[in-house]
Amino acid sequence: MPTVCISFSITVLSYTEAWARKDRLLQYERENTQRTVVLDDQADHFGSQDSTWLTQEEKAEAKERSDARDNALHRRNKVQLTIDL
Image 1 (cartoon, helix red, strand yellow):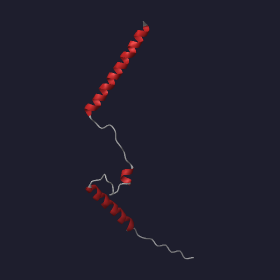
Image 2: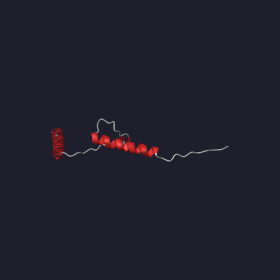
Image 3: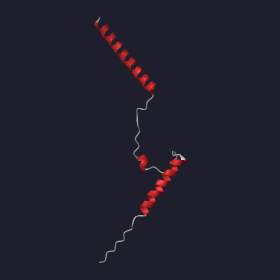
Image 4: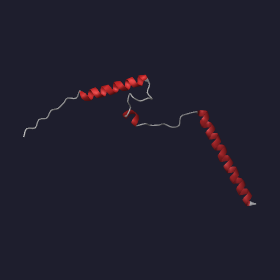
């Protein structure tokens, strides 16, 4: 007889766990909130105007940023060093 009680309590326990999981999943669906965040560290580093995922406005902004960065690099004062031996 004790085995029947143990197996019955295990069945009830697994049933209540399954019911709690179902309730939790339904609550997630009702709330419909975003629970994950994707952090893309390379998106800003490797972003270019050639990306097919960008809109036309975003491509124009990326091109302006790229041109500004290139102009800043080329406008640096060139240092000429002469070493006489």
